[in-house]
Amino acid sequence: MRKQIILQAFDMTAAMHNAHGLWKHPESRRHREYKSLDYWMELARLLEKGKFDAVFFADVLGVYDVYGGDEAAALRDGVQVPLNDPAFVIPAMAAVTNHLSFAVTVSTSYEQPFHNARKFSTLDHLTNGRVAWNIVTSYLPNAAQNFGLEKMVKHDERYQIADEFLEVSYKLLEDSWEEDAVIADPNSGVLVDASKVHRIKHKGTYFSVEGPHVSEPSPQRTPVLYQAGTSEKGREFAARHAECVFVGGPTPEKINYYIEDIKARAEAYGRRKDEIKAFTFLQVVVAETEEEAYSKYEDIKKYWSADAAKAQYGGSTGYDLAAYENEEELFTYKHTEQGQSRAAYLTKDAARPFTVKEIHEKFSKPAEMDIFVGSPEQVADQLEDFFVRSGVDGFNLTHYITPKDLQDFVELVVPILQERGLYKKEYKEGTFREKLYNRPYLRSGHPAKQRKRS
Ligand SMILES: Cc1cc2nc3c(=O)[nH]c(=O)nc-3n(C[C@H](O)[C@H](O)[C@H](O)COP(=O)(O)O)c2cc1C
Image (cartoon, rainbow, N blue to C red; front, side):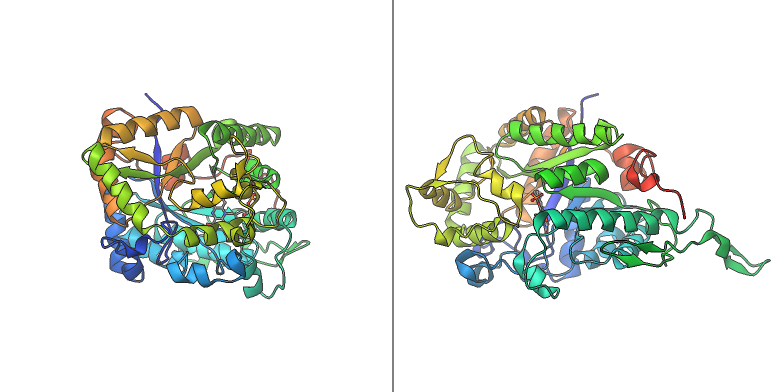
């Protein structure tokens, strides 16, 4: 059988995500409806109709205020703000679906492991094992200010914190409660067997957590672990912990380089290459005919906001494009404490150096990365080619006009991928991890499984 594409909708419980300026499009519903449960339940039903594996919720904890030195541009076009907490829509989406899973971004820089473990245990119970955690260390300076810090913790130290965060999480989720701790035996009058519930007594550099965990073991115990961020430290972290990685890059070959690098590092930690699945962005503009698709694309361009795109870029990289005035100057990589893989993307990872003028031009239209425009067959061809060349296991599908673009993809592209044997016609049974890996829990070689209870 051919390797099949794993498909996730890339989303955010915000008025807008990365479709900069597209809220102005007459068919955009999300900026009005993202606050309503009906909107998210409708989306869940649509995605399950299209056999999507999951919704991938990005999340941030502040405003994008690097571009031009404040958040004015980000607020004007709603760049990932206003924004609600993604966790709360998940039970409603799960209630109207049976198979769709939910990957939620949570930052190890600002969350507490005890609280986070309880949140994921709860979601895993309520969804019957359909949750994943996208582990990020965050890049917004404003987020740091919202959590009592004057400045962000430095990039590499954020990954050290993340490592300890994961260690505490494993202790809570994997070790604290034995499998048969809840016995609910009316004869002996015991609901929970106290000898099978353990305090974790974690005392580390960044966290001190006594335990025990307060939730009982959920179907997957630890949610499926995603990670996003391919800096040196990011790849090292992914190699140790991730079951799925979200990798960006300017070409399929560069994406492939990052995937292979992460897998090689994972082997050095005693893990297997096939324990990690990789995803990248997917941008599609599809219509019944090529002509209609290009006219749709022209329409999208009309509503695009360059300022909003630059605001998002500023927050995620630390590069304030408003301050780059010399158009002939080359746009080169410089170290920042924000997102280093995004910073590398248009600089040291690019196929050739760009001038500042070219960079400004790039942000004036939605073309920072590959976009597949065309008829359903043409889009399927481009997608298949990219899938093979990059070596990814799946995609996070972005959308400009929501939910219309997702509807079009489900109606027009999904059937072609299914015919080609590239995409499933039916879901597998089981939890998210069982669907991805045919096993309920993390593998024995994973660091979550390598500690002895103290
Ligand atoms: C594809 C991709 C998606 C990301 N999604 C988010 C996100 O939703 N929220 C967030 O705070 N950070 C996100 N990040 C960035 C992470 O916070 C990351 O831990 C941090 O910026 C460091 O990344 P680096 O390893 O690329 O330097 C993402 C990064 C990448 C590459």
